[in-house]
Length: 370
Image (cartoon, rainbow, N blue to C red; front, side, top):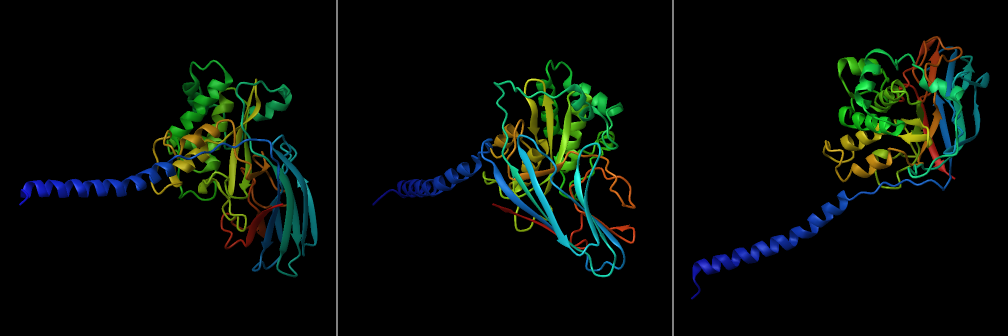
């Protein structure tokens, strides 16, 4: 007869072995799921058709609608054409005189509920900076001047200037300055899902209150303001995600059938040796907060690290830019200036609709890749 202790030890050994064997595949799967890649590369142009439909069914009077158009032409985007249809009595395209932001303006006389459809075609491609090479493209000091100026919500003096100096103290090159600011943004700010839309971009208020929770319009605006205050030309690019990410990141994707809430602003900096370079610290924060079921606090986490690396100098071409504009006053509008334009706008009898409530302000945006 076997010793009871020996029998017990044999049973425990067998059970432990079985548990270990059953656990290993799930552990391996978890590790594999954490090993993410995010490596956008330029070279392949993609063609998209983007459709914005506005339907003001409850409008009772004269109305105006403004729809932003893609108006960026660079080495990463070609804004090709736009067409429109509907029952407006007058439709025209105008452009902001400072930034060149284009938009459709449609006027309705109130004889029928306003209907407007705008279809734009645009080509995009991914971006990635080869830091070992020097760009041959150069901007003149005059062309860079407006990307060094303050805006209504991005002052460059006071606390903004002081903060930029503290962050970049000892940095010798513009690349070092931008890297310092990019890293500071990632560890200091955070994605706050409760913020409406893309945020407001009031950088002075963020620094004074030390409330660093926000969305892309806040976080990338702070990045741009700090870069400008540190002497590096920088700009916000206001646009919209069009299709899913090729790398499986759900928070860096758009649903082409319904782009409700897909608006996203990115950033660029001008570096002496590299020209205009893509940046997006806000999307790093978005991945940290929302990509998994857990708020990731470590920017070196395997889910975050590939995105953090790639978005310093690149981004994926599943996104379209409308413009780089700030402080726009829309012709015919009874409201004041807009901090930025990447949502449709509308008014009836001089009263503005809330562009952040597309259920009350009936509009849809969709895309298809051609």
